[in-house]
Image 1 (cartoon, one colour):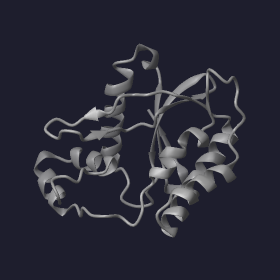
Image 2 (cartoon, one colour):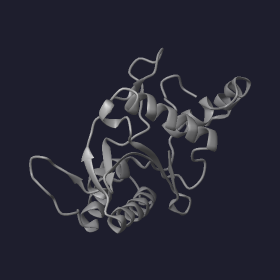
Image 3 (tube, helix red, strand yellow):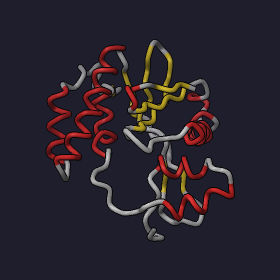
Length: 189
């Protein structure tokens, strides 16, 4: 693995949560390189998927999924990336619409990894979801395989807690939620 290639956030969480003696072998076994596609387009479309509102513009109607699909198709680098991102975005959009999720854009600064200048990691979207007057800080784990392990999820929750709830009193009572691909289950903490 190249020293300049950061681990994806999901793999970092899974490896960091391992017992100390298992971390180095796991890092050595990690196959860095170019994956066939990424889910960056779903993350970029998250404000539209979750109906992010603007304080300046009043209530904005939900974005039609056709516009989200067009964004993904226009920015994807392969047919595999289109298929994967559209599938995830569509399920999330349906879910958000079915339960009446609203969102507000909210920046939470990423972690700066010590000893790795310029490498940042975030276990949250730049949104706060609002559902039944509850604040929710979301993270996406869209992988069908090799997603967050149970210990990796605990690591991600801990990272979100430390960077959001522990620092920002407005988010102290926010729930943490990970959207996982496997039949779109959600974990709430």
